[in-house]
Amino acid sequence: MRAYSYCPHCTTALAKDMIDGRERLFCPSCSWVNYVNPLPVAVAYTVNKKNELLVIRRAHEPAFNEWALPGGFLEVGEEPHEGCLRELMEETALNGTIERLIGVYHRDVELYGSLLVIAYKVMVTDDAITINNEVFEAGFYPQHLMPEVRIPLHVQIINDAVR
Image 1 (cartoon, rainbow, N blue to C red):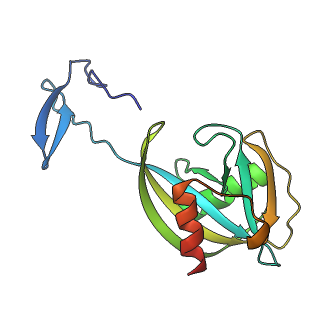
Image 2 (image 1 turned 180 degrees about the horizontal axis):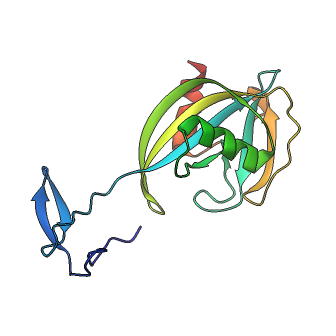
């Protein structure tokens, strides 16, 4: 993400100073401070009745063409569990039920900067998949036949989910 150069309120060039124990950009004219906060993301570790795991092959960056868990950015006014189920529905047309929270993770990624990732275990009873344009392919796999997931955070979520 590109950093601010000018104040979004009064257009004055921003300066740097130590604020709240960190070097931050601020406006010397109106005192606006650029607090850089993580973007919230929800990820669905989704299993069917046979305890097979859903993985998708991504059709866009980041991790273009990589196998991954479904997920995406939360929208304004949306609870994390709602965003998790919405992303699952958008990418695969699957209706799920949240079983439990797996974990909350922080990651810095080149494309978006700081992310706060909330991962849930999701159960589906009907596993008929219809993918959207964000996904090349998707399927439920038993562990021994699952395509290789190489995104480090998704590997960690998978490992944490089975503990």
